[in-house]
Structures are given as structure tokens and as C-alpha cells.
Length: 167
Image 1 (spheres, rainbow, N blue to C red):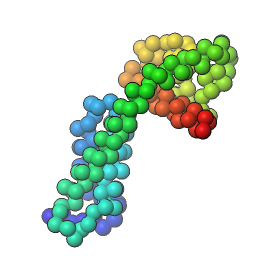
Image 2 (tube, rainbow, N blue to C red):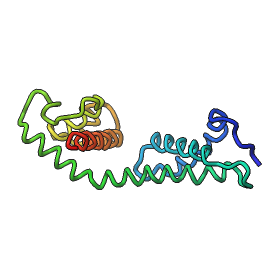
Image 3 (cartoon, rainbow, N blue to C red):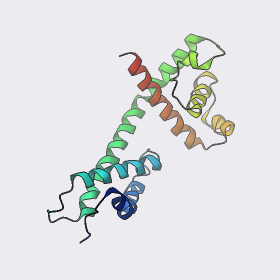
Image 4 (cartoon, rainbow, N blue to C red):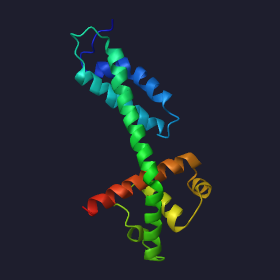
């Protein structure tokens, strides 16, 4: 039986491959692999916090439950966000049309100040310039899938920003 890791550094060193292999098995569920890896490590750390070494259970067996729990939660949140995406897309388009053709794109879409430039660019190209995913990917020299991921994150950030300001 594996020994219970004495600290979080040992934990990561010993069980990171396990966490990443579980994350990798969920890569086709619409969440970027890097996000799944992060969730798997959070699950691993939660397992460490909740594990009782006096019980007759291997830590790795116990950790699998927590890792999957965090990964599945992230997938569920992503799926929920994508269900709301078309409603959000319409809101963003409506705001862009209300503003007319302003020079200051931030004011026109009321983008959050902390939104990364790449997310701002993708939203502006998508909704103001009405560029296709392929056109955006060519313009930014990134894959279409990466454009989709950036746009999803930007929409989530935009929604969270509006939820906070409307509260």
C-alpha cells in the first residue's frame, strides 16, 4: 500500500500523473484540457484534505473519487454556460447594435476592464465586425477551436461582469 503523502509537494509529485490521466480521459467533453488538468489537481488536493490515513484505503483509490468529482463539476458548469451562450450572444449583439458604430469598442460593448485583450478582440470581431470563426482564426493566427474557447471564456466573463454590475 502506498504511503500517505506527508505534504502537498509530495502529493503533487507522486499523484500528478494519476490526476492528469483522469483529466485526459475527459478531454472530449468540451472543456479545454488545461482546465481539466487544473480541476484534477484541485480534486487531488481536496482528497488530501479529506483523507483519513487510519482507514484501510489506498490514497490513490480515494483520490480518484475527488479528482473525478471536480472534473465532472467543471464539465457541468461548462455545459450550463454553453446552454446560455446563445442568449448571451443575442444580448451582446443587441448592445453592439444599440451603440452604433463607435470608435471605442470597449464602451460600445461595455466590456469588463479586466477582460484580456484576446477576449476583447474575439468579441469585437464576432459581434461588431461580424467575422466568422475561420476569419477570426486567420486574423489572429490561431485555430478555430482556440477562437471558440476564447469566445466562450469572454462570454462567461462578460456575463459575470454584468451580473455584478446589475446586483
